[in-house]
Length: 317
Image 1 (tube, helix red, strand yellow):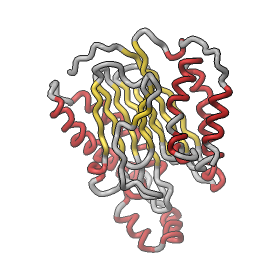
Image 2 (cartoon, one colour):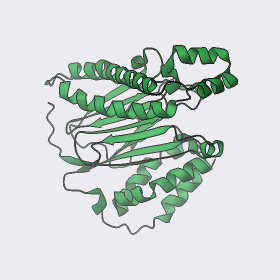
Image 3 (cartoon, one colour):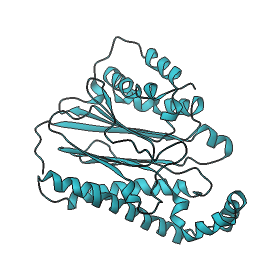
Image 4 (spheres, helix red, strand yellow):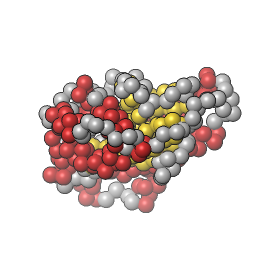
């Protein structure tokens, strides 16, 4: 569809850990992560991350997040099949900005309806909600069931000629260049403030999506990171969080992506325990030229402890 002479391969890794505060309170991990294909090594590739709202009104947000990543990966795959065979970038951009968010929200709401049909609200769920938030909250849950499944969503679709970035709600979507430069490919959503965020469960949610299209005319980003807000909130400030991408790139180049895969759960657990206490999820897409393999970077003479010690300092609040 869009010509590109730069050949590259991809590899995805990611993990999700239950927040330290959730463990103490007996709450589940309300984040979700999914990529397709499952191997994470073939194009086109979709990575999706979701964060179910932890408020009492969203008492099924764990399921909402799981449904969000499931329908989004399918919708983005289907989107490629129906995308017009054209090089008209204006038309492609219009489809991405309008049709894709609508399809995702429509599919998510249908999935929520199916889940609710198979598992109607239990009396205990509604009684607990009423006890915490009152009878009006219980009535609203019955009138507007999707709110109980509320979730944010971040997703990326990588093809051999373009990348789509998509987000509703909080969390972070970052790119890291080969030189270690970190960028946010999507604009900030000023509606995300303190504990307020845009959500799939809101009316006309599709209008709250931020969507970006990046043509791969030359080299793509070296890394793409998708994370729920529990991870950046674990750092002392934004500047320290933004160092994560270049740190990961250095480790991958020094010891291969398997080094990151084996330690990712440990690092995320440390982040929630020393930082936000929230669920923490991170998905990493590593893009390499056609002659590279992320597991085959030559060893670095630098020790690995320096980066880990720096990360420890930055995630201690």
